[in-house]
Length: 538
Image (cartoon, rainbow, N blue to C red; front, side, top):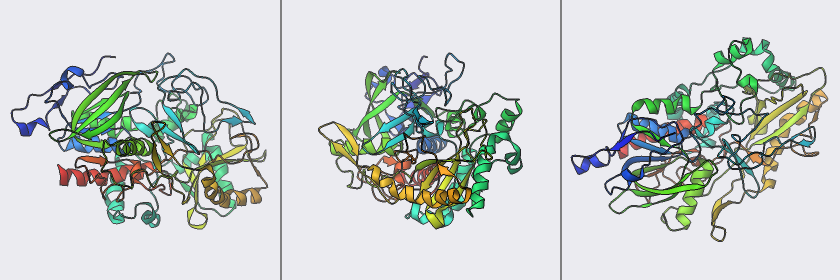
């Protein structure tokens, strides 16, 4: 697909150069590049604002900057995900992963990688697929790759933390402002809604969740409906057979083709409508350094769909927003500090990383408690034992298409352990010092729920989902947080103080835990920070 058309404006005065360099004509949705070599080879070419990453924080920054009159260019390491494959679908199914499923792997690495005790991973062609299973020494971190970031691959659970827990999440942030202004703003822009309880009680596709509710309540645990960004009217149509099945076709892990309101449909769509935002997918930033005459020189590799570098490009930006996700931003900043590109970054860069206390498990129910062969892939409820046991457990689907008699859970726990990213000069890469043993507090907190339920129901844990005779999915996280913690690695609004014009605006600002699924908090914090940055810095 050819690149979108754009041009370099010739400013009438030096003061206009920085704001009007790029005149956007078409918002890129293909896999081409907007970083044209002819234009960016000109010494006067500058970008007013460059956003690295197109996930929640980056999308908020791009939209609000554009609405303030600033031209924005976004670069995304992953693909655009706007072109159907040979099957007519953009995204592949969870149960039938193909080349689109994983980021530069030749074999799948599913979070739940065993079933009935047998391994279920399979060989796939190497491709810039949508889900990255990034392996560190003690943990696998699952991340979305593509325009829309994590919104492409998560379950859409849009949870605002309980007010009483917020001080432990972001202690330097005014809770009153967050709950009166920025959380409502984020929820409205994300299109957050809640399942119709009456429909939930009768539809076949949430039988698994009703079993989870029954067992939780019989053991005395609070059961709560959880907001989500799925189009609930569309899901009702799926169940009625009047719309193409998406959530009811098991679409979640490798993208959702219809009903989920990913960032492509919300913040990024609004950004497109401003006429001031352009996006270049398949571009990986490798360096950011101060530029002669002000601003920052940004170097990036343009990739093909095998992950190979096609060409290397350099641009100059007045302001750069790091929004590559907790892992991506942290790794880049640690590298830039250690290699001398940005040596004045402070000693907190790379610290305070956590897994949001993620741990998974399954329970084997009795034959009189079937969970249903048809399961919506979109979770909508959870068990809240945070105050008593330090765990919030999402009642998760197992959309296998067959009856499993299994209840499956992703728990978010109050795990206190934090890891640090560091530069490995010998290997030329960034390491993370997380240890698998640090998951034990999460297991103990999850057991505060499921040991009691099993005792009450006379059930047992499933031991066939994460290996052979292995109960706990303690090897992964879906919710990476921290690494460039707010008011420590940055100031209290995400500025990298030693380098005016450099900002962090993603989940790396949050110190390791949000007590619930994190993307609403990432979005709300980005709304808070960019509002201050626009008012004070622009």
